[in-house]
Length: 90
Image (cartoon, rainbow, N blue to C red; front, side, top):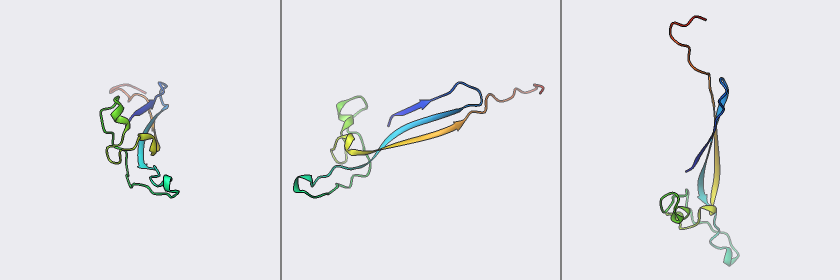
């Protein structure tokens, strides 16, 4: 799973974290018969280390990663600036 961060350096601004995961396999194994059948693979599991060609093949169903459903997740965190220093006057 790769994570991508978009961060703002402005005090009091928010940080948005965006990452992607690959869910169930969508490959139609009965296309050549004119039908529709999925294999039931529920999540992509890479067959090798990240950065290798084997990482693009699912260890569970042996399909390419592109057949798995792409899911984009975003999280927004509010930055409240730096905490006040002890002994500082307002």
